[in-house]
Amino acid sequence: MNLRPKNLKNKCVHVVVIDGWYPELTRYTLPLIKAWTKKIGADFNLISKAKFGDFPKNYERLQIYEAGKGYFWNINIDADYMIHPDMEDPTEGANPHVVMSEGRMNTDEYFKPNIYFLRDGRNQSIGDSFVVSSMFTHDVWEPLKISYEEASKECLKEPRQVSEFCLSLNIARYGLKFDGAISDKSKIHHIASTTGPTKDQNYNPVEVAKEFVQKWGVENIIEEFNKK
Image (cartoon, rainbow, N blue to C red):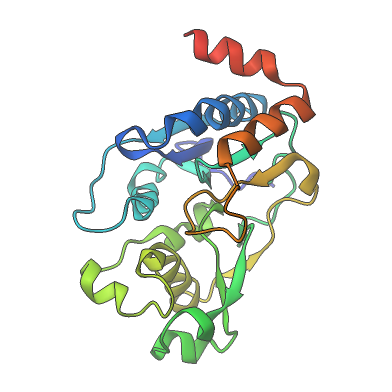
Protein backbone atom coordinates (compact mmCIF):
# COMPACT_ATOMS: atom_id res chain seq x y z
CA MET A 1 0.00 0.00 0.00
CA ASN A 2 1.45 3.38 -1.03
CA LEU A 3 1.04 5.72 1.94
CA ARG A 4 2.71 8.72 0.31
CA PRO A 5 0.35 11.47 -0.87
CA LYS A 6 0.99 12.51 -4.46
CA ASN A 7 1.78 16.09 -3.46
CA LEU A 8 4.74 15.03 -1.27
CA LYS A 9 8.29 14.43 -2.48
CA ASN A 10 9.93 11.24 -1.27
CA LYS A 11 12.77 12.18 1.09
CA CYS A 12 15.20 14.93 2.06
CA VAL A 13 18.48 14.92 3.99
CA HIS A 14 19.03 18.02 6.13
CA VAL A 15 22.41 19.15 7.52
CA VAL A 16 23.02 22.23 9.71
CA VAL A 17 26.14 24.28 8.92
CA ILE A 18 25.67 27.82 10.24
CA ASP A 19 28.24 30.56 9.53
CA GLY A 20 30.58 28.20 7.68
CA TRP A 21 31.06 25.99 10.77
CA TYR A 22 34.35 24.04 10.98
CA PRO A 23 35.30 23.99 7.26
CA GLU A 24 38.41 21.88 7.95
CA LEU A 25 36.09 19.07 9.00
CA THR A 26 33.10 19.59 6.70
CA ARG A 27 35.37 19.42 3.65
CA TYR A 28 35.42 15.68 4.46
CA THR A 29 31.97 15.07 5.93
CA LEU A 30 29.74 17.00 3.52
CA PRO A 31 30.96 15.36 0.29
CA LEU A 32 30.28 11.91 1.72
CA ILE A 33 26.87 12.87 3.10
CA LYS A 34 25.94 14.34 -0.29
CA ALA A 35 27.20 11.25 -2.14
CA TRP A 36 25.05 9.06 0.12
CA THR A 37 22.09 11.41 -0.32
CA LYS A 38 22.35 11.00 -4.09
CA LYS A 39 22.68 7.24 -3.79
CA ILE A 40 19.43 6.90 -1.82
CA GLY A 41 17.59 9.27 -4.18
CA ALA A 42 16.98 12.04 -1.65
CA ASP A 43 17.07 15.81 -1.93
CA PHE A 44 19.69 17.69 0.09
CA ASN A 45 19.02 20.75 2.25
CA LEU A 46 21.90 22.65 3.82
CA ILE A 47 20.55 24.72 6.71
CA SER A 48 23.00 27.63 6.64
CA LYS A 49 21.05 30.58 8.05
CA ALA A 50 19.89 30.89 11.66
CA LYS A 51 16.21 31.60 12.25
CA PHE A 52 15.78 30.96 15.98
CA GLY A 53 17.42 34.03 17.52
CA ASP A 54 19.29 33.28 20.76
CA PHE A 55 19.06 29.50 20.48
CA PRO A 56 22.31 27.53 19.90
CA LYS A 57 23.18 26.77 16.30
CA ASN A 58 22.43 23.08 16.70
CA TYR A 59 18.81 24.02 17.48
CA GLU A 60 18.47 25.24 13.88
CA ARG A 61 17.66 21.64 12.92
CA LEU A 62 14.13 22.55 14.05
CA GLN A 63 13.84 24.40 10.73
CA ILE A 64 12.97 20.95 9.39
CA TYR A 65 9.48 21.48 10.81
CA GLU A 66 8.78 23.92 7.97
CA ALA A 67 11.40 22.90 5.39
CA GLY A 68 10.42 19.24 5.58
CA LYS A 69 6.65 19.56 5.24
CA GLY A 70 6.86 18.82 1.51
CA TYR A 71 8.49 15.40 2.05
CA PHE A 72 7.27 12.01 3.19
CA TRP A 73 10.65 11.26 4.84
CA ASN A 74 13.06 13.68 6.52
CA ILE A 75 16.57 12.72 7.63
CA ASN A 76 18.61 14.99 9.89
CA ILE A 77 22.38 14.36 10.07
CA ASP A 78 24.89 16.36 12.09
CA ALA A 79 27.70 17.85 10.01
CA ASP A 80 30.32 15.96 12.03
CA TYR A 81 29.13 12.54 10.83
CA MET A 82 31.21 10.40 8.53
CA ILE A 83 28.78 8.58 6.24
CA HIS A 84 29.95 5.92 3.80
CA PRO A 85 28.35 6.51 0.38
CA ASP A 86 27.12 2.91 0.39
CA MET A 87 25.48 3.08 3.80
CA GLU A 88 21.98 1.64 4.01
CA ASP A 89 18.90 3.78 3.46
CA PRO A 90 17.12 3.89 6.86
CA THR A 91 13.79 4.61 5.17
CA GLU A 92 13.79 1.39 3.12
CA GLY A 93 11.32 -1.00 4.71
CA ALA A 94 11.01 1.27 7.75
CA ASN A 95 7.82 1.69 9.74
CA PRO A 96 6.66 5.26 8.97
CA HIS A 97 4.88 5.43 12.32
CA VAL A 98 8.19 5.21 14.21
CA VAL A 99 10.81 7.96 14.66
CA MET A 100 14.33 6.60 14.17
CA SER A 101 17.38 7.96 15.99
CA GLU A 102 21.00 6.93 16.42
CA GLY A 103 20.94 7.96 20.07
CA ARG A 104 18.77 7.60 23.14
CA MET A 105 19.13 8.46 26.82
CA ASN A 106 17.30 8.37 30.12
CA THR A 107 15.10 11.45 30.35
CA ASP A 108 15.54 11.96 34.09
CA GLU A 109 19.34 12.16 33.70
CA TYR A 110 19.20 15.03 31.22
CA PHE A 111 15.95 16.96 31.65
CA LYS A 112 13.75 18.20 34.45
CA PRO A 113 10.47 16.33 34.89
CA ASN A 114 7.32 17.87 33.42
CA ILE A 115 3.75 16.76 32.85
CA TYR A 116 4.51 15.26 29.42
CA PHE A 117 7.56 13.26 30.50
CA LEU A 118 5.74 12.00 33.59
CA ARG A 119 2.61 11.05 31.66
CA ASP A 120 4.64 9.31 28.96
CA GLY A 121 6.40 7.22 31.60
CA ARG A 122 9.03 5.66 29.31
CA ASN A 123 11.90 7.74 30.74
CA GLN A 124 13.46 7.58 27.27
CA SER A 125 14.63 10.55 25.21
CA ILE A 126 16.30 10.67 21.82
CA GLY A 127 19.61 12.07 20.64
CA ASP A 128 19.37 14.69 17.92
CA SER A 129 22.45 13.96 15.80
CA PHE A 130 20.85 11.48 13.36
CA VAL A 131 17.06 11.43 13.25
CA VAL A 132 14.65 10.04 10.68
CA SER A 133 10.96 10.95 10.60
CA SER A 134 8.05 10.47 8.24
CA MET A 135 4.93 12.42 7.42
CA PHE A 136 3.21 10.58 10.29
CA THR A 137 5.85 11.54 12.86
CA HIS A 138 6.66 15.04 11.62
CA ASP A 139 5.47 16.49 14.95
CA VAL A 140 8.86 15.52 16.36
CA TRP A 141 10.26 18.67 14.69
CA GLU A 142 7.80 21.15 16.19
CA PRO A 143 9.85 24.03 17.69
CA LEU A 144 9.48 25.05 21.31
CA LYS A 145 7.09 27.83 22.21
CA ILE A 146 9.35 29.16 24.95
CA SER A 147 12.55 31.22 24.90
CA TYR A 148 16.06 29.79 24.95
CA GLU A 149 16.50 31.13 28.48
CA GLU A 150 13.45 29.17 29.64
CA ALA A 151 14.33 26.04 27.65
CA SER A 152 17.95 25.93 28.85
CA LYS A 153 16.73 25.71 32.46
CA GLU A 154 15.03 22.40 31.60
CA CYS A 155 18.40 20.84 30.70
CA LEU A 156 20.25 19.27 33.63
CA LYS A 157 23.69 18.91 32.01
CA GLU A 158 24.26 21.25 29.08
CA PRO A 159 22.13 24.25 28.01
CA ARG A 160 22.99 23.42 24.38
CA GLN A 161 20.83 20.29 24.70
CA VAL A 162 17.68 22.37 24.16
CA SER A 163 17.45 20.71 20.73
CA GLU A 164 17.29 17.24 22.30
CA PHE A 165 14.94 18.56 24.95
CA CYS A 166 12.61 19.79 22.21
CA LEU A 167 12.64 16.51 20.25
CA SER A 168 12.23 14.44 23.42
CA LEU A 169 9.41 16.64 24.64
CA ASN A 170 7.61 16.13 21.32
CA ILE A 171 8.16 12.37 21.55
CA ALA A 172 6.48 12.41 24.97
CA ARG A 173 3.78 14.97 24.17
CA TYR A 174 2.59 13.17 21.05
CA GLY A 175 3.29 9.64 22.27
CA LEU A 176 5.60 8.92 19.33
CA LYS A 177 7.32 5.57 19.12
CA PHE A 178 11.05 5.54 18.37
CA ASP A 179 13.79 3.07 17.53
CA GLY A 180 17.30 2.89 16.08
CA ALA A 181 18.09 4.11 12.58
CA ILE A 182 21.11 2.25 11.18
CA SER A 183 21.76 -1.48 11.57
CA ASP A 184 25.26 -1.66 10.01
CA LYS A 185 27.41 0.60 12.20
CA SER A 186 30.55 0.01 10.10
CA LYS A 187 29.49 2.63 7.56
CA ILE A 188 28.65 5.45 9.94
CA HIS A 189 30.77 7.27 12.52
CA HIS A 190 29.91 10.26 14.67
CA ILE A 191 33.08 12.25 15.20
CA ALA A 192 31.23 14.23 17.90
CA SER A 193 33.37 17.33 17.57
CA THR A 194 31.12 19.70 19.52
CA THR A 195 30.36 17.87 22.76
CA GLY A 196 33.02 19.53 24.86
CA PRO A 197 36.47 18.36 26.04
CA THR A 198 37.41 14.80 25.18
CA LYS A 199 39.22 12.42 27.52
CA ASP A 200 42.13 12.36 25.07
CA GLN A 201 43.50 15.87 24.70
CA ASN A 202 45.31 14.79 21.54
CA TYR A 203 42.02 13.89 19.85
CA ASN A 204 41.78 15.65 16.48
CA PRO A 205 38.39 15.44 14.67
CA VAL A 206 39.95 16.32 11.30
CA GLU A 207 42.53 13.57 11.60
CA VAL A 208 39.79 11.11 12.51
CA ALA A 209 37.88 12.14 9.37
CA LYS A 210 41.00 11.62 7.25
CA GLU A 211 41.46 8.15 8.73
CA PHE A 212 37.93 7.15 7.71
CA VAL A 213 38.42 8.56 4.21
CA GLN A 214 41.50 6.34 3.79
CA LYS A 215 39.89 3.34 5.47
CA TRP A 216 36.86 3.53 3.18
CA GLY A 217 38.87 4.39 0.07
CA VAL A 218 36.70 7.40 -0.82
CA GLU A 219 39.44 9.97 -1.50
CA ASN A 220 38.15 10.51 -5.04
CA ILE A 221 34.75 11.68 -3.75
CA ILE A 222 36.40 14.25 -1.47
CA GLU A 223 38.71 15.48 -4.21
CA GLU A 224 35.97 15.85 -6.82
CA PHE A 225 33.66 17.68 -4.44
CA ASN A 226 36.27 20.16 -3.27
CA LYS A 227 37.33 20.99 -6.84
CA LYS A 228 33.93 22.61 -7.40
